Amino acid sequence: MTEATIKELRPTSRNKIIEAKVYRSWIARNPPDVTEKDYIGCYIQSGEKEEWGNPNKDQMVLRRIEIQNLNGNSVELTLWDDLGETFPKEKIDALEKPVIIAVSSCKVTRFRNNLQLASTPATYYYIDPDIPELQQYKAEYKAAFVIKPPLQIVRHPYKDKEQEKTRNRIPLSKLLTKSPATHTDVRFTCKETITGINTSRVLTCKIHGGLASTTYRYNFKAYVSDTTDTVMMTFFSPKADDVVGINCEALVNSLPNASPREFLEKLLSIIGKTHIFQFHYNTSSKQTTVDFILDDILDKPEAPKEIKDKPSGSRTTEEACETLETTIPEDRQIPTAIEQSLPPTPSPNLIEFPTPMSPQIPMQPAATIPQVMPFEQESLLQEQDEPGKQHFKLKT
Image: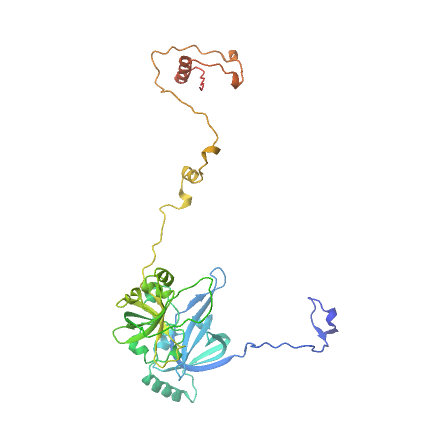
């Protein structure tokens, strides 16, 4: 190593020693924590291995595992590559519950205010680790699960629409006993019937002055019921449009005097409808009662797709040319000569003239073409079908 100054440094400089003084330091407000963490908890469930990345490049294998602590809070652990490929899901699921899992050297991130763990090259997991506190942990989790057994939840949507309709299909009576804070961003599905609308809710609009364009959206609460219980669910646009059958702006514009404090007949007509609702807990509510927010309706009819009988590349040349034709105004059209042909059947009353020799025909300009009598013109046109003769065709 050799000593150098900052002025002498080049992009290719290597093994240089610089003696410098710190002039100014910059510290990030939220510097990322690169310290790897260890975690221990109760194994709840694990998903199947998935492929992640561009299929034309290097793809990676991942597997998601749900770990829960004694407070009921779940943490998602993502195992990458070999750890996700070789994870013995079937053997672990067959073990006696509860199963304790310990994971070392994990990267910690935060998504939607929820902690997530991801494996690193130094990560390793231990199932029912040989530690002195193992039996104590098992007894504590077993007692907690007797009081409030954990829900078997699938946190990521299915690609198949029919399978998505039954994801997290849990009765409403059981959802009312769970804490919304421990099920953040979890979507549930249930076949429910709208039994009523909360008409006691009064909304007020702030004083905002004139608006360039007014936007109307649905925001109402309705009571929905399944075979076990009844809950309150909030409907927002645009998902509420599928329930009402018309968007809010079109409904308001169709009324002569619209009032936000009046429930229209169109809104009251949704009472009695049954749908497969997808919803989540309302974690921002300050009320003690548990309520939900609508995410989607899974049994709505799909819009028909228009499919042409032939692709554009399978058309013939004539069809393709027809599509390129444009309409030209009559005053801009170029006049064309009108050609009239007589029937090909020769008439017995016509007299054939001998064909003149080519050298005897004088070359004359088009303007000085002599007028041909109709009898002669018809005779010349008829000579087209006679073999061994030269043909002439004159136009009038």
